[in-house]
Image 1 (spheres, rainbow, N blue to C red):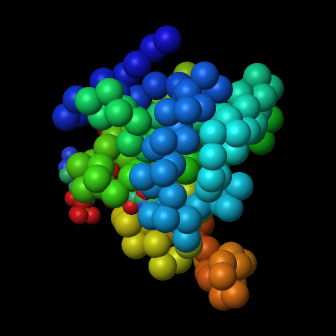
Image 2 (cartoon, rainbow, N blue to C red; image 1 turned 180 degrees about the horizontal axis):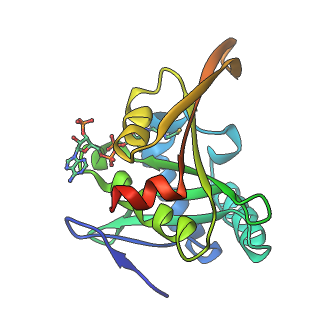
Length: 183
Ligand SMILES: CC(C)(COP(=O)(O)OP(=O)(O)OC[C@H]1O[C@@H](n2cnc3c(N)ncnc32)[C@H](O)[C@@H]1OP(=O)(O)O)[C@@H](O)C(=O)NCCC(=O)NCCS
């Protein structure tokens, strides 16, 4: 319905249930690249699984909760950003992201997350936005840093993946700090 131009022919827009086939094809290109770094429920194998993810986000959005947005580059879905949590009562949210390999290194996710932060921390009036990532996910922590977030701490060995427990970093930015950055 709406689409926000970002850069290099890339647009940000709502990723909804009717995109299930397109999302499933995109996951075929992204699956192994994102698997170690994102929640396992997000890494589905077929159209039904892709649709279930989109349905889950749609239901949460209907309650003013989590939201999912796609990134289309030259008309092809190449990744996305989301509010994995959006809690108006607590005044806080958490942002997540992913890309297929061909679209890394272009600044798309930093720009898209900036749009989410602008919306959450200004018109929606939330006070705090968080970013959680595996401590060895250098590309992800680089995005948090580029967004002006502060590393607040590390949850030790909280992320089990393939028999190993990984540390998780917690980054965050507060609304006054985001506004002061003037992005
Ligand atoms: C995390 C992830 C989305 C980061 O992707 P990314 O392309 O590095 O991030 P951005 O889109 O913000 O782009 C930044 C890169 O573009 C470059 N870039 C080019 N133009 C830019 C611009 N105008 N602004 C910012 N960066 C720009 C930056 O230099 C940087 O590249 P570098 O790291 O090689 O120096 C991606 O690596 C990914 O999908 N990983 C697997 C899934 C995952 O980890 N998700 C996050 C879970 S917490």
